[in-house]
Structures are given as C-alpha cells and as structure tokens.
Image (tube, rainbow, N blue to C red; front, side, top):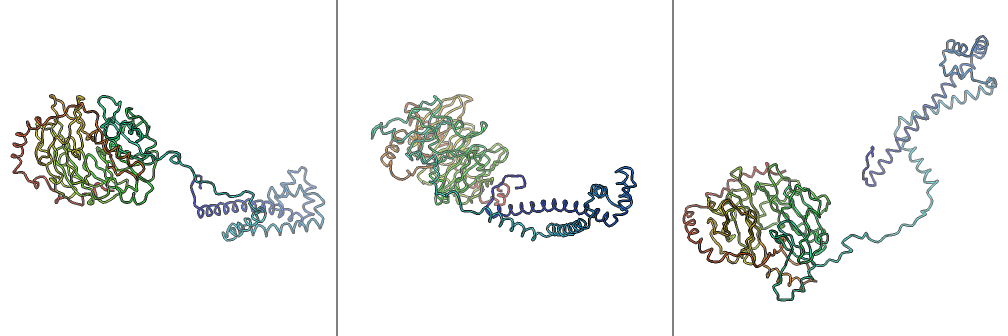
Length: 558
C-alpha cells in the first residue's frame, strides 16, 4: 500500500483494490485520449488539404524540394509540421471522393471518442461503472467452478504439544544459574529421609530460589532496567540434582549490561480469570512502586517488553506476584520502612513509571527491598551492612498511607551501619549472609527471636575492619524442602501445587557456621540500652504519610 507492505482486513483490501482500478482506468484513458488527439490533428490537416486540393497540388508542383513544399504548406495554410508531412505522405488514391468521405467520417468518430474519454477523466461515477463492467467481464470469462478442494486441516501443532506436562523442580542460584529437574528424580531419596538438594555450584554460590512447577508453566524474568522476558519452563535446560545449571543470560535474550533482579512463576497465560485476578507489583531504588495487571504480560515476545518506565539514575529492585490485596513493606538504607495495603496502588499500564511508594529525604538514600505479605504469621527480617539484624512481627508496623516517610525499622548507628536488606521469613527459613570478603554464614531463623521495631538488633556475623555485608538471602531448610518435594510427589497427578510465586528456597549444606544462643545473649544488654534510648521516640517522628500530597503522582505517573 503506497509502496509499503501492510496487513489489511477484507474491507480495506477491497477499498485499496478499487482505488488501484481507478488509477488504472485513468492512466489508460489518458493514453487513449492522447492517441486520439494526435490522430484528429492529422485528419484536420488532411481535410484542409482536400478542401484546397488544386492550390495544394500547384504548390507542390512548383516546389523544388520536399522541404520547400512542406514549408510552403505550413505558411500558406497555417498547418503544423506534422500535418504538412502527413499531406506530403498522402497517396494519390486518397484524393478520390470515397477516400475523402472516409476521412471525414473517421474525424467525426474521433471527436466523439475524445469527448467520451474526457468525460471519463472528469466523472468518478463513470469510472466506477467501467470498473464494474470490466470485473463482470472477467467473472464471465474466468468464473468457472473451483478446480481445487478446500479441506479442513488439523490444528497447528505447538512445541508444547510434544512435551509432557510433568512436574519439575526449578532451582536458581545466587549467581544466576538455573536448571530444572524432573520431580520424579527425588523419589530415589526414599520417603521420610532428609536427603540433600545438592548442586555442584562454585563454593561462593548457593541455591537461592527453589520452586515446583509444570513444564507448560511460564517464568518471567525482570531486569534492573525494567524489562521483562518470558521463558517456558520446558525451555529451561534440564539437569541432575547435583549439576550447576546454565547461566540465565545464555538462555534468554538479555543484554549483557543488564542483570536479572526478580523471578516470577506464572501458571497459565491463557486463563482469563487467572490473568485478571493476579497482579505484578514492582518497586525501584528511588521509592517508586507500580502495580500492573498480569494480563499485560500475557502476550509473549521473544525480545522482551518494558515492564516499567525507569527514570534516569533509578533501577528496578523487586517484582512480586500478588492477588491485589497483599500488605506491602518497603525499607530504606536510612533504616525506615513503610507498610501499606496494595489496594492503595491502582493498576497502571506497562509503560507507566508508577507512583511514590515511600519518600526519600536524602539524595543518597535508596530503597533496599520490598516484601509482600499475606500471612500475618510472617515476620520481617532486616539486616545492616555491619552484620546486625533482627526479626520483628509485622503487626509492629502499623498500616499507613502510601508515599509517606515510614517508621523506624532499625536503629541506625555507626555501630550497625546502614540497612542493606529486608526479607519476609518464618521459623522454617535459614538466612544466608555473604560479606564482601567472600565469607558465607548460615543462620537458622528459629534461633533468632522477635524484637522491637526500633531496636538495633543483634550481631548476626562478625566482620573484620573495613568489611561489610554484600548480600542477604533467605532459603528454606533442606529437611523442609525435602518434605515439600515428597508431598509434591504424593500429589504428582493433582492440580497445580499452591506455592508462592518465588517458591520455597533451599540451603547449601548443614556444615556452615550457625550462631549459638550465647551469641545472642551477648547482645541483650546492648538491645536493652538501645530500647531505653528509643522510648521517647514515637511513630509520629518518622511517619509523615498523612501529609503526603497525592498531586505528587503526576510527577511519576504517565
């Protein structure tokens, strides 16, 4: 269409075809009109010569050359060069009365044809009648019965049609290695045994995420630049329980400069009810939060899509799958956290930037994490850069309006350092802490008691001078993972196992260092002193949610 390939519906296709036929008729008519006018011009010259036949013959006989005769005709009878040449080329037999009548009749017919051709160019309805007539002629000439037979072919076969929809265990390591293992492979451990998840990952790597899925499920991967990529579970390379797996960036088309920040398992992208009742909520380092319907991610694209518009100097930090009514907690490096209901964040389009989730009062402050909580029994774990941390009941964080400054979640001092992580944990979890010097320590969460919200916590790991915490991950204890896998095996033929979107998490080994109760008792005095110092501090000193101006949304929302 106009020199460009385009997809057209039937109505547009017919319209463009008729437009093309109009152009064909116009160009053909102009060509025929030009030919008719040229012929009429010659006939006019011949008729002039026949009307002055004796003078023409006398001029020709008195001329010394053909060119002299031609010039004489042009001058004496006001003819054109073409007309003069036609008179000189005329044979003697055309001087008869019969030939003269033929020339007059031809000229009269040509004038009628010229008038008709001009009317075609001037009248679109006349051109339409010509198009209809020509199409009818084509139909009458070629409109015979169909030579071929239209048959209903079998439905198109998709790749997933050739792959069994069996349950598998997906593991993702801290360094970004992923693999899937058939759930049936874990039968060899025997029922009731503790077993070992196992992996031949590098010493500093460990399994950070473990989830049970079906081969036909989807995985969504979110990069720090706010892009989302799809991967069918059956496209994840299969490995044994002890294999390392493959790097995610070698499987999907992710730019080398971008890092994966979040993983989400999606059960079915074709179930309309599932898509409409689930949401993806994301947060950035600058405190922006965004909620999008899962339906916006239902059309898979090989090169990924923009999940959120990231402002300059910002990056995506976390993405979670929710039902639309979860409790959201966001924490800042400065030690403050805010809790609000997800319902206060309205769904937005994929290309929107989002709205303010928490206010940053310093240029160097940033969000360190976001959690979504549905279970009131879940506790909140925070860890500082100098190895201090604590668990706090979620009810200690009162629900406020989105966009406020929040309340103190950790008493930040020179001793504790800034906040580096916030996690949702239960007694079944273990905590993996990695410092910048490469040391990894594993702590059982049931050994860490709940403390007040505004305390500085206890020492989780001893650090050397100049060292700090690099990363924190929560993983599920091996015996808990083994029990869940055994339960999944027992229900192998049941419907999709109701797991969290990030799945249960596993541990590396049972030989890592675990802090004893004595280590926590050493901190009791420090905790008491800190709590006493904070008794005069109220939530109102840190919570300015009620003063948040909703008009600020315009700054962040498209």
